[in-house]
Length: 157
Image 1: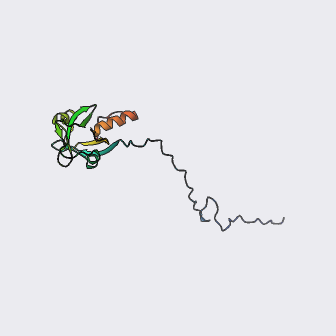
Image 2 (image 1 turned 45 degrees about the vertical axis):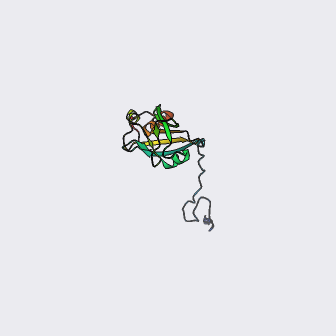
Image 3 (image 1 turned 120 degrees about the vertical axis):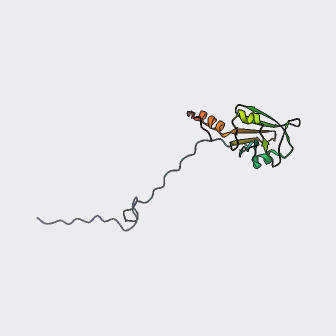
């Protein structure tokens, strides 16, 4: 019986799909990009910032205060509702924006909402310059947990 020669199966010297130039390394294949979820753009009616309550109850964020146009001497009425402290511009208000453009939260409201010195708060100011809301991060945490249907653990930043 005569032997029959087989043609060797040697890949060409050029680059093969799925191979790294003939060296056995795969060529990276680009993955499709993730599509970001639909998320509404932030409202241009509000400006946000962060602050820490000091030992005297003062809190502020210079960018927020500047956007509101609140400077030292602006009179305010300070109230609270649903875990948020609300400061409204009011020419007859009992409270005043202090030097350094900060808000001083009255002691009774600090105690009611657990705003000890060092507590971080979210500040949200309405760009019409009439309203500033301050919420402890524990309140923000509760809102986010409620929206995500997560159990509350009593925590908060």
